[in-house]
Length: 435
Image: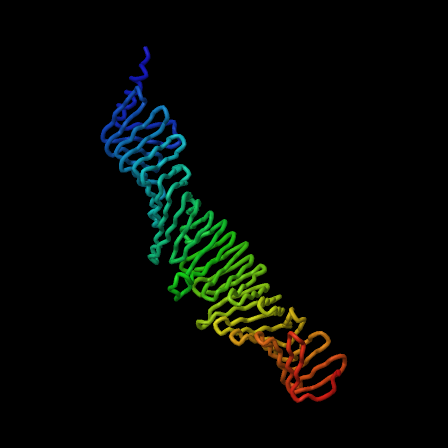
């Protein structure tokens, strides 16, 4: 005569006291507690007081654990702690754990602590795959990571977080943002590599940071792009931005656009590539080049433009092309070299020289060496020429200034040309000119 199902279950339970070994699972699981209650009708075993569920190297401890035999599922409540094999601890008010899928659903103020990395994650609810070491947190997510060497803290926020212990990468989404050393990073999706303290941002990615020595929040620089990579460790502190990049520097009222940007936060050095253009908002002007490099030297901001330089001054209609430009922003001075050519587009005037100099405060541009000025049928030559933007005049002197029209030449000590009307005034003229 066979045993009834009830007697079979009771004999199995009492044979181990308050301990049950499930041999069908791929890993050994154990359940125990200070008090155990079995219900055949509900197919449940309830453990109270130091209720413990062991699955491989992972342990779930709670005040009460109800194990549903027909579902192979544990429902843990009260002071729940999940001790994981990689020195990770999760605490919460409730955990529902499936022995079959190895998935723990954690609710009631869950907190995950990666003790080796000094990382703490909080959210409204979590899911942890114990066999894959993958955590997913949802709802009002926050993450803190304390650098044990520097004491600096990284703060992260978002609606959804996932963490894979194998590569130690935390992914934040749903309006994520990370704050690190006063720098604020936002985007659609973020990947935070804990060990390197690097952050990769995808979709409307941007980072706001305050330059060294600046206390005004309104002077925060911004770098935005389709993708932004940020790293701050013991060696590096820089940003890389890719695709539709925009850099805003409020201190100088500058906006830079291009396809790639690199910025060193500690030194304030920046490089732009892939068709970069600098827009000077106050001056209503822009400068494009193959490469743009920005640096602060002796507290002075210097920008180098190299290759296919194009300057456009919208107010005056001045366009300049050249091979190189160095701009000293604080001094309002720029030097333009390598075959520079200036076009005064409104009056069809062309100026060439060995090099140009721009003086922003004086609203003047000076041409130096082998200067040639052409306006319609008239050409003027000198060693030096100054274009006064406000007066709209060009004054030539140095060497032997001369004016040429249809083969007729007249020399002078100085030549002044009204750019708008074409009227020419010569000082101490010598030679013949057209009547």
